[in-house]
Length: 170
Image (cartoon, rainbow, N blue to C red; front, side):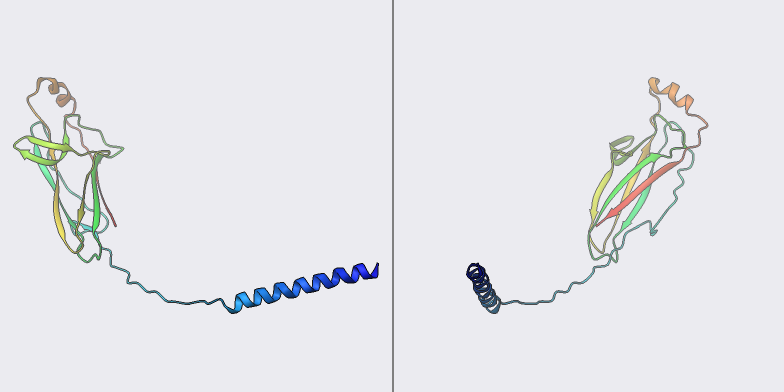
């Protein structure tokens, strides 16, 4: 029995030595490289009407037949990257609504507008880094349509509050 046990231990020792020799040779011929990397963090800047957080616009008196615009100056001056913007307008959750008052991103002519803007249909685009652009939200309350007369009458005396959301993304 001793012979079988000795043979077993001898085989284990020989195999261990072979594994160590092969692993050592493999590790000896292995090469490793180390490197460094660096990068510059670009500046980020986005402003609306020279404000970085909030702004207020007063529309004045609203009535059937009124039209106007809400000018917005969007700025990426001081930014090292282009800025993608998204503009939407919606009634505040606590505000009454005016059925026929609509908001648009394009004015095609007198009382002729296109591309309605609301909370789901937004005005989008890109500002090139370091530049300013001007955009506007146009509003128009049509007048004279017989079907809108009842709605216009029901909307009199309302005090509305609108939320304009302007989001800038890198």
